Image (cartoon, rainbow, N blue to C red; front, side, top):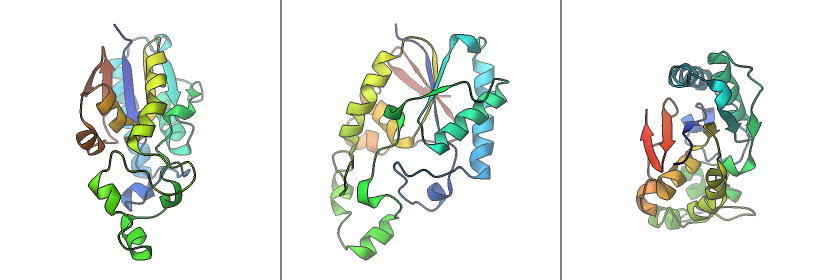
Amino acid sequence: MSPLVYIVRHGQTQWNVDYRLQGQADIPITEEGRRQASANGRHLAELISDSAAFDFVASPLIRTRTTMELIRSAMGLDPKAYRTDARLMEMNFGDWQGYTFAELEARDPGCTRGREEDKWNFVPPGKGAEGYELLCERVRPFFAEIAKPTVCVTHGGVIRSLFHIFGGLDGIAAANVETPQDRVLKLQDGQLAWL
């Protein structure tokens, strides 16, 4: 049996609102994002009776760290007493980070066609860029190493990769999974469920 993991996507950012590709750009959360994070923290406080038994780990980006700190505050815990792991960072969109798809198409017509045709395997141009398959290679070892109950704050791309790794979805389906910012995802014994 694998340990219980609660997974939360970071709260809303302005780039989420604008449909701008964030990737690993360090973007803060909005007031709505702060509200979402605190609400998720209150939900986790109801789910977790012994927070001392849990590891708390977040992606090192500001949007996930702020979300984690608001979650921990809402749980009545020290907001800074958690760790970060770079394997939980969002997929790197390379040269596309910071742009909307409309802006990319205006600049280079047809450049996004490959992603539309195969979102799972497509890798954007630019140094360090990743597709979902590469992201899975980064994420899988982190989850394999989890040895105790854990609260994890991460990103939409990482959550989609989990639906491929644990949820049995093929790449096409996993790449299109909705990743709400106001829900908690439970991973236990290889099974995923939104709470």
